[in-house]
Length: 137
View (cartoon, rainbow, N blue to C red):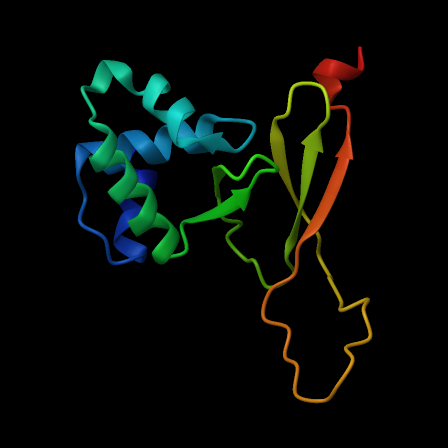
């Protein structure tokens, strides 16, 4: 089971450490994006200090393993990046529990007419709001 985490770290040219494996596992097991605080709480038994977790999240984001999602209260959530992000993905924010879920969007296109030549879209984001299945009941 640990081999899939080790493979991910190797593919992204990162050293394999127990902390990195635990962070990957926590994020991959989570159905929604997680904050630094939520990860810190989830990994409390691992004796993981906040600075090490922050550095791990930064390294994962830099290498493309994770992506960051800005919340309305200016915090960051972290989620595993889709293996092939060429098509992009959407974020669904539950207005009740405030969890953020990532969904693949196979063929995102630029729906906005850019005002002048020379603008180049590098990333796109679709943000959806509503109620998740848990809160919809």
